[in-house]
Every structure is written in structure tokens, then in C-alpha cells.
Image 1 (cartoon, rainbow, N blue to C red):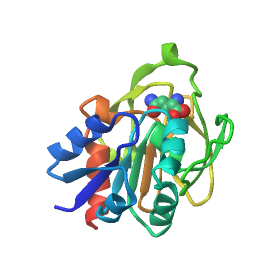
Image 2 (cartoon, rainbow, N blue to C red; image 1 turned 90 degrees about the vertical axis):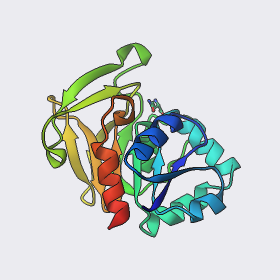
Image 3 (cartoon, rainbow, N blue to C red; image 1 turned 30 degrees about the vertical axis):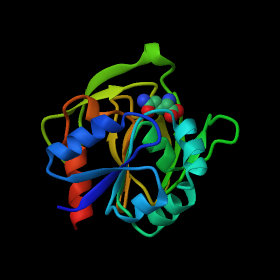
Image 4 (cartoon, helix red, strand yellow; image 1 turned 45 degrees about the vertical axis):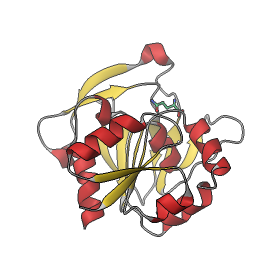
Length: 193
Ligand code: GLN
């Protein structure tokens, strides 16, 4: 099976490693550019996007990651990882940047703070039945989907919470926290193809 990475600068790295390992993938934490060179795909975990952004520059990973994404590296981002994959963000902290790749505008903390975290059963047509038990924690929302990106799931009120573009995929919520592995399966399928 192909070797995949989880960006391991900050956030819920272990949860992603557990899901991917459970699916039979060889998984390595990625903190250095050399480690990025040796993976066929990478997951960007949930956490705090502004911190991951800063640490990626300190670790010299930001530019290699941007290049790898532009060159077609498969990437799956959850929550903070979705923010990092967005071409545009609103409500970023001072100076916050993203790696980009998906033609969307994302708003951070769109549902409010920690107390406004919630869980819901979400229909995701590309995954079929059953719906995805999805956990939203200080989650971002996709405010605008540009022509290059494709929405994968919307809340009942129409707000977009999952998107894809080529080999890139991102969700506002955390499948890795609810025993849901179909997004990770899809990511591994993209890596294998
Ligand atoms: N609010 C966080 C951010 O802006 C994301 C929260 C999460 O990843 N659960 O990065």
C-alpha cells in the first residue's frame, strides 16, 4: 500500500493516523520537507489553522507543501485543514495565510466558539448511505465555491461543509473523531489512482 503522511505540526494528528492505519495504509508523521518528499498523499489535521500556518513556515514546509499541492499531491484536510487548503479565507488572524489549492472562500469559526460545537447526521451523496455522523468544533464554513471546486455536502440550511477539487478534498467537520472512515478511504483511493 502507498505511504501517506499526516502533517504533524499541531492538531489531532493521532486520530488521523489511527483511521489511516486501520485502513491498511502505511502512515508517517510529516514535519520536515524530506518527509514530505516520501509520501504519496497527506492529511492536514484539525487544530488551529493560524498555528499550523506559522509552524509550517518555521519548519520550512510551507513552500514545499504549496508546490506539492500545485503539482497534484492528494490532500485531505479536516477543519483547520480545510482552512489551510482554501484559496481564500475571511476572518483569518493578522497575517494568516493558507497553502491554498481549493477554489473556495472559507470563514473561520463560522458557528461561533467552543460552546457552539455540535454533531449532526450529514448526507454526503458521493459517500452514499448511511449519512456521515459529523462533529463540528469551532468549524469553518465554505462561504463561496469558485468554478474549479465542487461542493460535496451541505447542511440543511444550504451552507457548504465539504468540498473537492481534483486530488484535494476538505471537510469542515472531523470524521476522524467519530469512527467514520469513508473520507479517508476516498483519500486513499485517490492516492492509489
Ligand atoms: N477554529 C480552528 C481554526 O481556525 C479550527 C478548529 C478545528 O480544527 N477543530 O483553525
